[in-house]
Image (cartoon, rainbow, N blue to C red):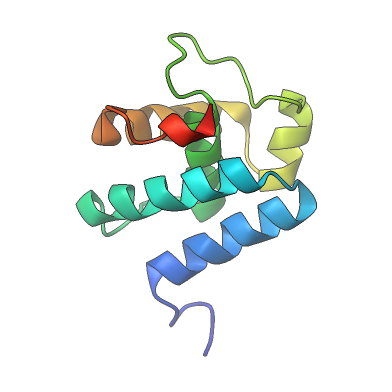
Length: 112
């Protein structure tokens, strides 16, 4: 099966799995997977670069409950950009969109 024919959820999981293979964090990974399913339920299509969305998801989940997010814990923004191949501006924009859709009620409480 080509990458084009894969369902969106599988592409997203592959991208997250690749990231967490390089930067292991089992708690954050589990929280991201839960948030991914909830987000895609309301947004079955993602316009733009998938890595921007997945970087935004990790950024949003890691900053859950933080009013002014400023990065992913334990990682420089430059390294986070490099890991996803997109700019922090894109990551922050996608993170904000994800946060608005999920509304962060208590979705990610296990991450803290």
